[in-house]
Length: 502
Image: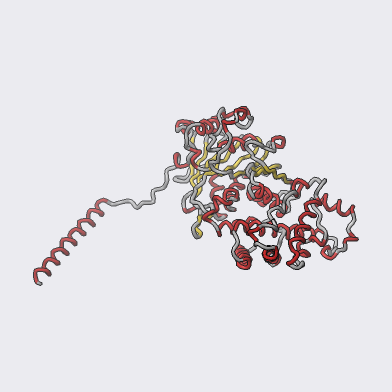
């Protein structure tokens, strides 16, 4: 889909709505797109048998048909509850029709395997939210505008998995309120270029991937990049997310990208204190962009030091900075043939205390394959620069690769942000693959050197940045200074001459 068209269309809907908080708008718009997708996907399912499902009478719908379709799709939608039929309703009753349709769709999955993936998916579309208006009429008017805007959205191919419609919409809305993006949602949305890089690293030269996992999956963008990158229908996707609304968005994204309900499992909860997938590990690829420097229970729960995830390091991540708790969690869930690729806050790579001890554990046990520094301003609403940590359990030597991908040859400036293009990502992957030293860009550092540097993993500790300053010719500079001084002396003399003649 043309992103310019998409952004213009979203702005058109927002203008028609009038004053409304962008985050409220985001919730309704994303659920509206998802509802339209479910309906079109359902219609397409019947169209393959030349059945005009939009106009099918209820009498033609039998219980065996319902069971067959629900087992296959994970849900069932009666013709009257399809997006295309609901929006034909008068806006006076749109709230009732929507409520009935959403309840019916969710209830259709009860007592079926897909029930866990369908529950609560439409909760964000709250028809009683006072942000939509103070009266039922005002609320229904706005609901109708949103749905009509979604209906008018021209999507060339809704089922093309290369499209990330929800991701594109969400990313655009982040741009619209970039000053608040870090607080209001940016922490769980990874920009698509960084997602592509993380995915390429996690899957590099590993085609034998059966299960992938994101312990802090947010809206599911990293998992979806693996879906696009490998395009293997047999892969299973696992994720956990602490935020209820974002957890629902991740499940919507799975459906929207034609991942069958039997192939994904997105759980709600705190990954560090209530992990859901212990029995499903190990995973062949782990991708994650965990929240930076968030608080966690840490040493306040003495049982955690005996947890299989944290006990090998002999120390817990600081209570005020859970970053390494997420990293140790990912490592524990990683298979012996896979990689865990984690987007990290740079401070964890040079601070002392417990974080230094955990770095020592990772390095002494040869789990660190690469550390890659990216340019700043790649996340909306923040100037933060991140580093990517690549962990592996099957390294062939004890060296650690450091890559400085923060210079201008690894991004393009786009308004106030720095953006990696596909060619920049490929360049980083080529460097990662070669493990060759490149002046000012990449270096393979022996274990002994890293250990002697207090186990620091900061890229700048091991790679000298290129000095862009022009070399100074002292003789030439002194000559220019002398000429300037002579010129100034002559100017003063000329001024004095002129004054004496007055």
